Picture 1 (cartoon, one colour):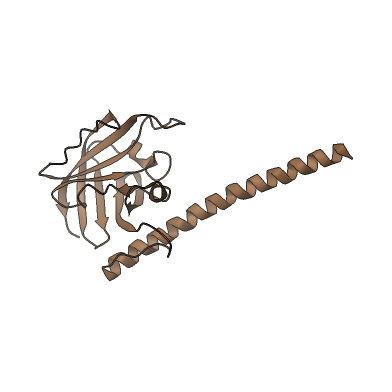
Picture 2 (spheres, helix red, strand yellow):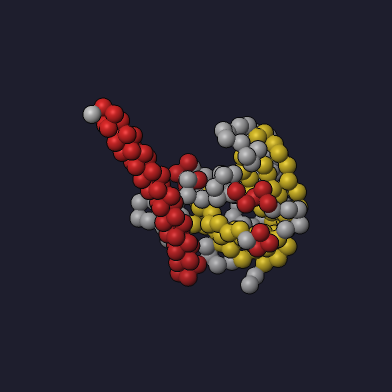
Length: 189
């Protein structure tokens, strides 16, 4: 009897763990569908639309790098809850397309995984939730300490920064951040 019970218990535990993992992936997929829908509704209606009724954030922009086929929805704020679903717009920074530096931060292993493949010279398209479109060109990158980003809050040009943890393949978090800087090259569409 004990020999039969051990495999059954282990199988049940394995099934529960598999189900839990599948649920997390299904929830992440559904969240992305809801974020895309909320962003599209925001653009269409001109007002903020939450992706689900209890959300504490909402889509503010879509970032695309067409050369590498990357696209992600940026959320308002960079709280842990927001960053679980997508990159966040840092509150103390301007909106994309405004004079100053718009800063979007995201996790290196999920929604900002593509940042490692953005090359200097790549075009980064940003569409805000109000439908305005801005085109930036990646012009520099740096690895910095989290408390010494080098981002100038008094910048007078129209700039964009995408930032994530460094190194890209690390398993745990560390004190360094990868900062990709881009400058506005066009508007419209």
